[in-house]
Image 1: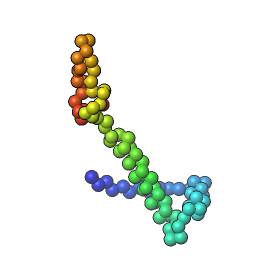
Image 2: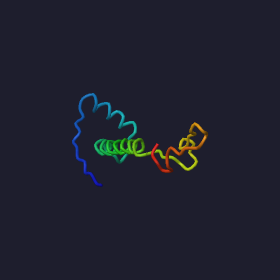
Image 3: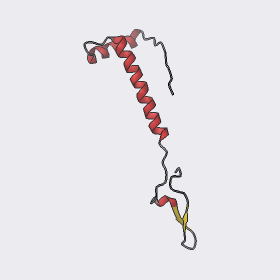
Length: 88
């Protein structure tokens, strides 16, 4: 899926001054403030979304030898509680 995102960010006052101070400490010679802000804003968004994919996209499943898949009944017989590949 492709999603085009266009957004205008307004930065002013103390926020702008603080960001420019930071930028002046870390800047590369060939990058201006506007380009740095745009690329950093996009990169941080990517990082956040990748984090959420990792947090919510990982589904833990039962493995073949997973001890949580089995239980014992009153007579000591093994009961299979979950199949291999079932979500935990």
